[in-house]
Amino acid sequence: MAEKQTSDATTVFPDSLEYVGFQNVLAFLAARYDIHVTRRTWYRWTQQRVTPPRLRMGNSILYRVADLKNWVEGFRLEHVRRPARGRRG
Image (cartoon, rainbow, N blue to C red; front, side, top):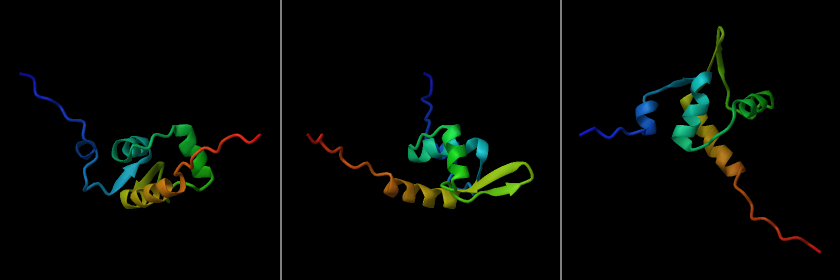
């Protein structure tokens, strides 16, 4: 019998992870927090300083996992959808 493979976020991104590189940050957010953003949106948010602080080491960009977690908590609070209002007329 074939073993069932799990696609759990903790197996892909272990809890002991301290930093996430830019190449993996979007996959990290999707796997851990179910936040799906495009690379273009992430670049725009970076320019608008909406994203968490980043660390540049040479040509590499790193994000601290703790900063991403705090950012996600704030992101969810800010982007709670309000119920649609009916048309006036």
